[in-house]
Length: 203
Image (tube, rainbow, N blue to C red; front, side):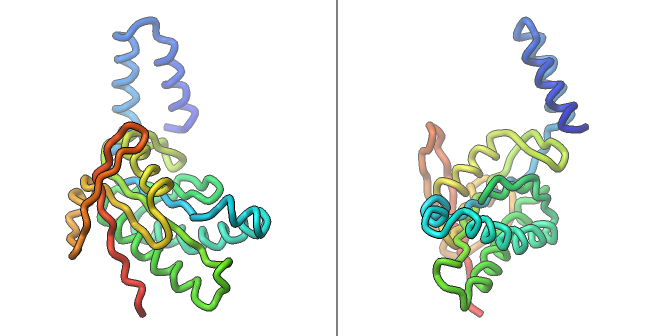
């Protein structure tokens, strides 16, 4: 079930003359590509400002450094990096607990990698995680409400060393953490209930 198959199915749905016919194709799409799992979305802070000050090639080199640390950790925890878009990473995990554990290890690894480097060379990464039913297109892409919510957490809210996880993802993980602060934000007309996972960066 390739990307071409998915695009063709979406095109067939768009071409249907009425809602009933569209619903038949929609059901087929969810049967073929529907999955339940965790989305893991990262964003590097200060992209525009840093790129302007230091130059885009310098920042692209930092992105590559971040990917070389992040990608193996995601794989080790059972996740799949679906794509990188400039300074963002989009990954899928079958298990919410694995996504959270990977986020903790990534954050700790980047903190260690920053040690001894000048401040302008520090990689500042925030991570958003959500859980739910989505469309997974092989190992290339995904769509759905968890993707939208995870993007809001990772790109709009989370800052350096911050791991924001929705309440539903935390519940699905079965993990427990002490001292969690439960928060809620309304972004783009959707309410997001989430927590910040504490990160131990001490050696």
